[in-house]
Amino acid sequence: MANIEYKDLLDAGVHFGHLTRKWDPKMAPYIFMEKNGIHIIDLNKTLVCLEEASNAIKQIVRSGKKVMFVATKKQAKDLVAEEARRLKMPFITERWLGGMMTNFATIRKSLKKMSTIDKMSKDDSYTNLAKKERLMISRQREKLENVLGGISDLTRLPAALFIVDIKREHIALAEAKKLGIPVFALVDTNSNPNAVDFPIPANDDAFKSISLLVKAFGAAIEEGLSERKKDKDDAKLSEEEEAKKAADAETKE
Image (cartoon, rainbow, N blue to C red; front, side, top):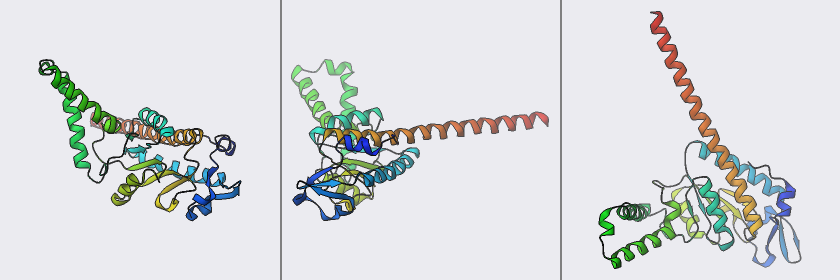
C-alpha cells in the first residue's frame, strides 16, 4: 500500500462529507463530527479501511485475477482511466451499460465486433469499400470504443470491482452483488457502506480526494502484481533446480 498518513488525507480534503440532511444513517460509525452543517469523516477509520481493502485486493491480484475500475463522474473518470491503463486493468468511465456483467455474453459479442472491425481495417478489402461504408464502419467502431474501450481485453468477468461513488454507479453495484463479485469502493456520507464488501469512507466528489485514494488503491494492486511475478519466478527457479537434481541423479547412476 502507498504510504499514506493522516495528514495526506486531511490535505486532500478526504474528511469532507455531504450536508448533514443528505446523510445515510448507516454511515454513522465512520462519521467523526458535524461542522457547519456538513458531516466530517473520521480519517482514522479511513486509514484502517484503506489498509483492509489494500490487503484484500493484493491477494486477489496476486492470484492472477482482474479488477475492474468503475467511475463515470466527470472529476474521476480521467484519472481512473489513467490508473487502470497503467495497471493493465479493465475500466468503465463513460457509461455503465445495463447487463455489462450479468449479460456478459452479449457484451463479449460487441467486443468481438470491435476486434473484427480492427482486423478488417488492416485488410485490403476494407480499402476497396465505398467511402460511405468505410465511414459507417469507423463510426460504429468509435461508438463501441467509447463505451467498451476500457474492457476490450476482458475475456471473463472480473474478480472484483473498484467503484468511485456507489450512489451513481448503483447498477454496477447491483450486478456485482447478484454475481457475488466483491466490491471495493469510496463511500461518502450520503451512501450505505453495508452495500459494499470493502468500503473506504471518503469524500467521493473532490478531485484531490479521489486522486489520492485511487492512486493508493492502485499502489496496492501494483504490489500484488509484483508478488505474482515473484511467485512465478520462484516457481520457475524451483522447477529448474528440480530438473537439475534429476539430471545429476541420472548421471550418477
